[in-house]
Length: 211
Image (cartoon, rainbow, N blue to C red; front, side, top):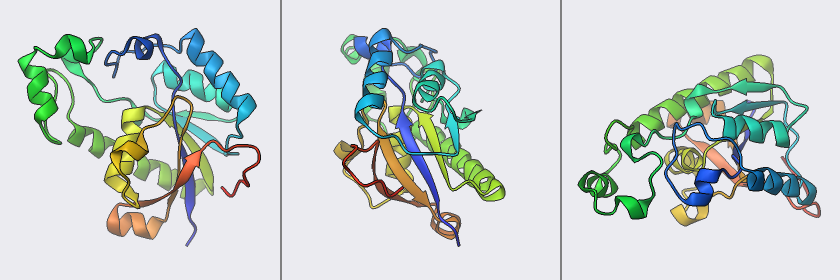
């Protein structure tokens, strides 16, 4: 049975990232710094050759996809938008330290959610559904390697929930414009809801590209 590769890539930097505030569904574009960082990485690194690019619908992701993969078909994947932070959107952790709802959320588990926001469990369900849909499309259309441009929290959650081997959370922090290569075996996904983590992306020019 064939294996299918997906390059998970975090969007470039936004003005909200620079200010250190929570942004989930708030639709920030890339900042000038974010665009310049991506262009610099295009010069310094080798991005994988993919057949299609899937992207979160938020413009910081679609703009990143257009910069990094300008000659590839772009398909919007609603399931991979960022976690909805509800009433915490646009506020920093420092601002929220005295908010009881924030402290409760920070101590909570998978089902905890910000006021008017979304839980990590809900995020996990929709990203599972999204991966399943993309895998089916890749199988039906014989696409062997695609990219998915999404958000740092979404990537971390997917790797933690479905990735093998299991990584320390400190190992799955992604810099803007960077991410991880994963390989999905349909039988393994069907039986265990798991994929294999192959390594990081993009690559240095002197590294041999095997993906």
